[in-house]
Amino acid sequence: MKYSEKISNQLNELLVKNYDAEKGYLNAIENVDSDKLKMFFKRRATERSEFAKELRTEILRYGELPEDSGSFKGTLHRNWMTLKSLFSSNNEEAILEEAIRGEEASLEEYNEILKDRTLPPTIDSLLTKQKNAIQAAINTEKVHEELVS
Image (spheres, rainbow, N blue to C red):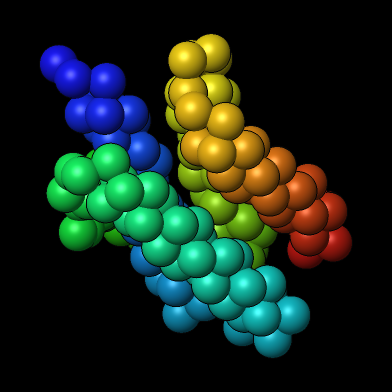
């Protein structure tokens, strides 16, 4: 496997995660009543859309084709969030818990790829920036979770 193909494959994994996260946040907006949470989820969805654009650009720069949709696993997670919110007495708290769980999974994937010390500096920098934003979102979500519980 060529080096450019290896990097593109890794970036495509993150791209799919970002598609899934964006769709998950848009789904969460539909399942909460709080205007503050709706705005928070909207900002996260927009952020993940921007991450996806950045990753697509890098994949194309390496001459490979970017993925164009999310994963089956992401669809299952969104469906689980919806189902859980239907049966939960505090659906906003349940949705936040699931959002945090999804973000922590994304963070693990970013950390795993960033362990590769052969990444070009531009990609390492981009992924570190995105990873830090996800960590900040997790921290903010945990604060919101405390407020709604």
